Length: 75
Image (cartoon, rainbow, N blue to C red; front, side):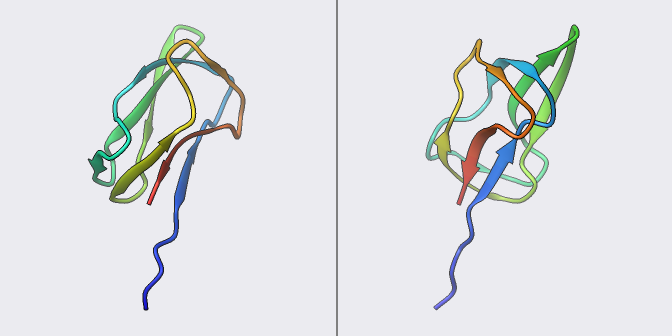
């Protein structure tokens, strides 16, 4: 039986969560923007590295995230 491995999409810097582009249960493709961060007046899209289904969103709009914080989990 094949096992699916979850993928955590993490922040790569200290930033504010500007928008969340997905909802739990959404299907995403590789390269889709899942969260838009803002740091130093620049918008940084956080992209899905592979296709999957959003199983958890760990942030809300306005949160300040740190390097390594989990933003979204894909299954």
